[in-house]
Length: 295
Image 1 (cartoon, rainbow, N blue to C red):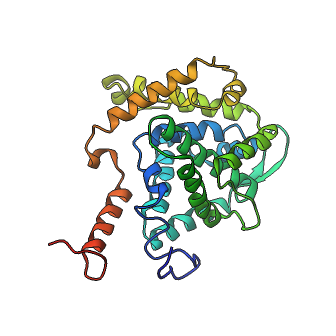
Image 2: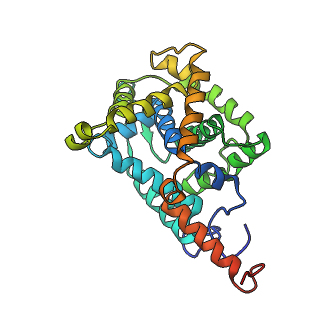
């Protein structure tokens, strides 16, 4: 994108941010079923033993699961809708954390580093793949060309987080499918992954929420739907080989969920970064010299 760039260690980030209202990333990441897609991404990520070892040994997801989900959502919101400085700050925070995440996978003794390009690529692909797959399945109208454009757009974020220019990143749905086929031999259901999946299905809730609201069954239903939207090979790895008929049922449920969420007011279903970006671009459109000014 043209325009001035951010000063400091994130040279090349446009001052106005990475994307704009015309991007496919705005459409995908602003969709109301992104929460469902995020749970699917976490379940898929857990199947890589090195990535899961890093989470199990360094993440506070057991003590603060909602905080971890919030921080992930904040990063996606900042990099998608934020200004250049907001993008740079969010990326720098992630890179600082990754620099200290290292250790050994307990079953094989294999060493891992969170800033390893192969692990960064795995996390990136499980996220963008889940976001794209779930939103399209739930009814977001995207052409195949737009889906490819989304994946190409998101490679920018992966590079900023630490995937070096020489390391390949999928820029199309065909390349993404090829990547998952190539990486599958490395995947394994570890005890840590099994624990994380159970945790995702039944996370801890305060007593007043657990007994005074329908949050527990609602979350369990959401997590079960996210599981049903996983690739069939991933379900088999978890020991739950869903029948083929389960997929169309899950897609129908996702469409019902999305339709219901779309009836909510924008201020309820849209995150703060998106709302701020809409206001920012609206103000720019009304400024002299920035297009047609409405009176």
